[in-house]
Length: 179
Image (cartoon, rainbow, N blue to C red; front, side, top):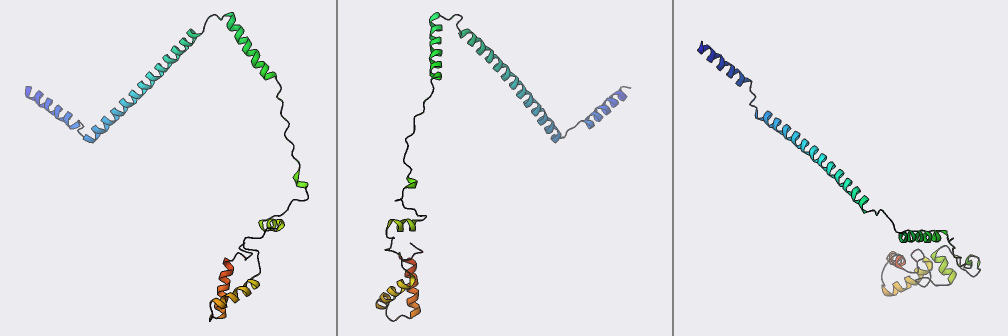
């Protein structure tokens, strides 16, 4: 009989051992879950402590503000406050007088003013010469420049002279498109 009981106890222990969970991943998961719960509890406790300390501080501040107020005010203090209020009311009661702005003459109607809508027109109306001594037409520029080029560079073809003239015209201050 003792053998049967010992055998039954051994069988029960073996069955319990078979049902026991030895999975390391499951144990780690359970441990992490437990840590999360502990962290959350710690946060909640810290939040509760912080709220309690804030409440205590506000109560203490309220008590100190009440303690700082004097129970009685002297007649001199009452007179000073009334004088300050009266002075403030006097300053508010004064109407603000705006200064009259200086009136300037209207120069839009004067006849001797120059009216021009561009730089060229304004310079022409004022009688000021353009940057390069005035503008001329391409034909006039070509006549002047061709003579100079024939003296400086003899033996070129006419198309080469015309190319030189076109390049000089593009850079010239007498060109109205450039001025």
